Image 1 (tube, rainbow, N blue to C red):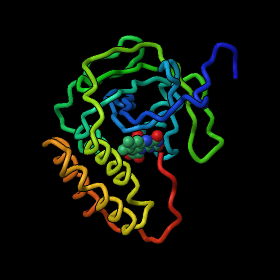
Image 2 (image 1 turned 30 degrees about the horizontal axis):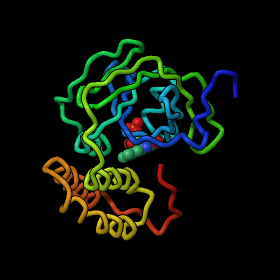
Image 3 (image 1 turned 90 degrees about the vertical axis):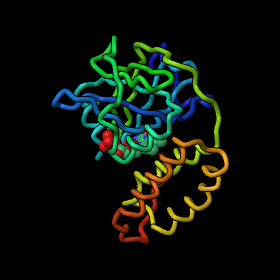
Length: 211
Ligand SMILES: Cc1cc2nc3c(=O)[nH]c(=O)nc-3n(C[C@H](O)[C@H](O)[C@H](O)COP(=O)(O)O)c2cc1C
């Protein structure tokens, strides 16, 4: 590790699930849920996008983006299945060429300074070069947690056996019913429909670990 670098693999670093915006080659912004590993001070991020992801291609080309801490799981669910509203509100980032989602709680503008593509998933080490707070984080809520888990499953329908997905959804659903509000319920319905409509994986296949 180079002098002055925070070790994002240190024991107190953790994976923070959020949304990354990148800039597409045509100049429009792209939004994808991502779970980078972060140091406690949020000075550095270790992003691990799949080699097939648009986010990786955009980051390799532009070497910068914006990571958002969110509590709006409907926004996250929509981004996960590529059904974002046309009316997603953004403003331009200050320290990078990028876009900030105005419905996020906090955002971190970052520049990629190291890329390792030797493994199955690329590892992009990034320095946070600007940040801001838009509103308070709502707080811990089990329905929000359940939607995050379902959104991860929705992005893995092509990898996981249908019965595994359905089992996990059945376990999570009571959390949404008992503790969620209208946005959590809408997000849940959207994800369940997406998963139901998705063609079956030719399972059983070797299942991959979550992000
Ligand atoms: C909460 C959450 C976290 C995720 N984290 C990652 C991640 O760290 N790396 C990754 O490649 N995909 C991750 N995914 C899946 C991607 O969002 C999904 O595959 C997406 O379609 C790929 O991004 P793209 O739109 O840039 O192609 C995550 C999904 C969710 C719902």
